[in-house]
View (tube, rainbow, N blue to C red):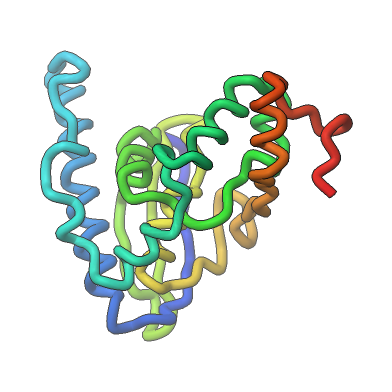
Length: 201
């Protein structure tokens, strides 16, 4: 664990949904705490998979379901093209260029997996005031996986993250630069994406 607990501050812009967010957070925390306990008791890795435990979809309200549905389906033609272009592209380009930042939100399954694979403990999610909430987490080491999944968790319930202590300021949001038509062309040619050579304009 690091010396201090990290946190996200958020504006409670949908107060009627805050309790649902808390309910999901503490369910996730309880399952993630079981992971730590299994490590402490020297159980074999892979014996316990929290992503397969509760029916996580039951924790979402209707608006959160709609939020998570706003993403490119990896099994769609566009999603398959994205994966093919990713595989064709050199790592230094695919990890740094916004061509590989997709529009839309996280899908729910990916969010759950990311939260359980992130190298941090979930600590608390509470109201600081009637209009401000805080989510506390404790990284085990650096790197720990980043705060993107935690931000998505909060904002899927209509709240707005305003401060990210990891970044010592506003949460850094990637700008989507995905160009499906260009991606289709490159994949058809068997080429990866090269920023200086592939002008998205």
